[in-house]
Length: 74
Image (cartoon, rainbow, N blue to C red):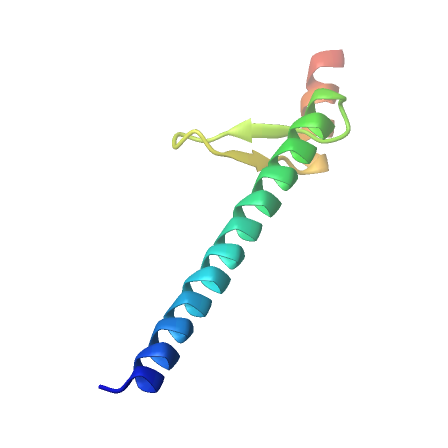
């Protein structure tokens, strides 16, 4: 293997590793921002969620919230 081939392979692998790491990092940052925004909306009372058996939160429909409120008022 000559030096030019070795250099091309090395630089190619370094570039691939760099861009893969940047892509994975940006994806986790976006997920963190979305999670924080939804938590703040829930805390401020703009959305309603419920926790399933896996511990994950899911949004509650407006009809469920209204039915629960009407049931409490009667």
